[in-house]
Amino acid sequence: MTAEPETPHTAARSPAEAPPATVAELRALMVAITRGEVAVSLGAKAQAALEKILDLQGSPALLSITALADVLEVSPSTLTRLAHSLGYSGFPAFQRVLLSVQLSDPGAFYTRHASAALEGGSGTTRARVAQLCRENQTNIDRFVEQLDTAAFEAAVAMIMSAPRVAVYGIRQFHAMASFVVYGLRMIRSDVTLIDSNSLGIAEGLALLSKGDVLISASCAPYSAQVVEVAETASRIGLTTVAITDRASSPLVGSSQAALLVPHESSFLSNSLGAFIVAAECLINACAAARPEQVRAALQLRDQMIERLGIEI
Image 1: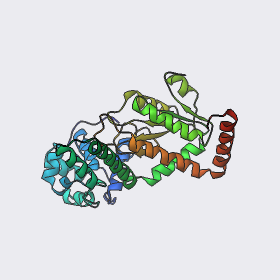
Image 2: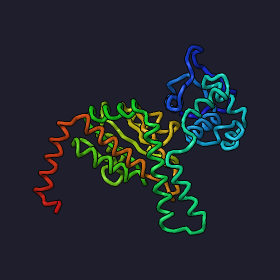
Image 3: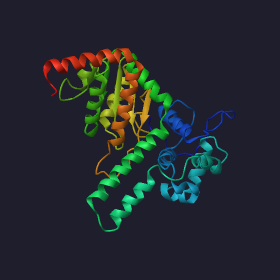
Image 4: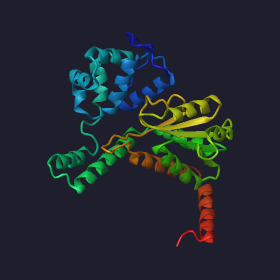
């Protein structure tokens, strides 16, 4: 959705409609705003601020409007206008919701200790390994805490009821897309990887029809090609599932279900650790939705592996 010019923010919500009461409801509202499903008008600056605020869950910066404004590099008045746009009486009411979760990040104890080891001058291999592992644990904890169960279950239902499923991701997310395809093919046969090196993107989409599902994966900085393919798939009537990082992700707008996965870490690129775990959760849930079908499929798979002598 194209961001509107920065203007005074007026909420077009019904006076009788209560503002979000939890961080989960705030995140769901952000998804709805991204999809253009609600009459809430946010300028580019306010929308960017809300996106960053949702990533600050548990941060001490939320204790003060001034501290939060400094972290976000906006004025306190911008945060006050944002609160009004979301339906709150003012920033304090908005703040109470933001502070309804614990102030200590999941896994922060271990991350702090790993960071302290690094900053203490030792810079040992164990300390560096520990830091990255603890950061991935924190991301996984955040994924569980922030899980939109309705969206997750909707994604499972869409995938398991679709005649065909295709998965698309490029660069790092090509590896994840391949992993999702491998996992889902253990459950059902009509799952394909859209890949420019094989059939091609256009050809891969052309094989799909209304009712089929496209799973797209990307995180910030988002791959423009993945976003374009997801939007095209939605326009031609495909059901789209997004595996991405934020409620404001450009993949959310064209999706019918979005799985949001945190990925902040000290890895030199985007960390895929929590994304792979999220993919495992999705594959397991799809399997649990059709247990008899899955048992039969896995039995046939094992028989073929044995016949071909693939494993020793």
